[in-house]
Image (cartoon, rainbow, N blue to C red):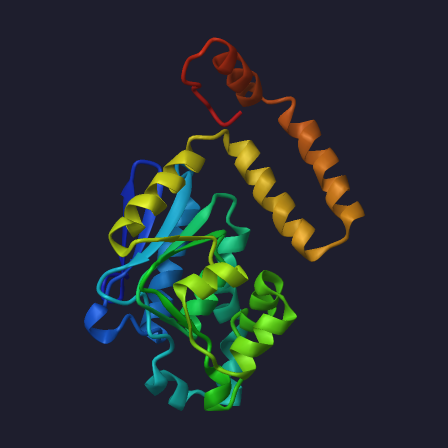
Length: 260
């Protein structure tokens, strides 16, 4: 195991829980943080029993973003050699066939905002605050910020947040669509786990194809999306899990899915 200094990983039933675990350091993102994240992602990829992933944080803040000591040391050559790897770390959540939920409290700045943009659902505590201030330091967001934020909140809001380096609270984040749910701070992890467990209890094929279909619809034409729906429906309607779900509903019992 090559993680544990910046990130913790555990399982609760079918849910993998990644915890940003350096609260004294404001859960800053640096080289060690990112390497630990990669190791956890490898573990997640190898676990066929997982039904969902939850990303949360210890301490008063989710993350204050990039470690400026790390940023000070980077060069154009470093970026040329490493940026695709860095981007893939945050793209991992969208490519993962199971749902990924981010539970955010306190500060969520810069690279941390880019991290949650790759997740499927973002739940914010009422004390959460969001900012994506890279422009202030002479660069633009480069781990999905300009791309995913624009898809999520629209071009105008993305420009306001990125070009203006404006900080917003949880209520405004909910209003513009940066987060999907807002709860009281003390209810954050309970709400996130409840949703994660609910989705993990659905037939795996249904979840997998629904996530792929939504992602595809966000990035392509209506016609391409409809073609994907035709293909996924053809597959899903031949599964044992679909028949089990319907039978269990009619018999008023809890279904038992086998992933086939």
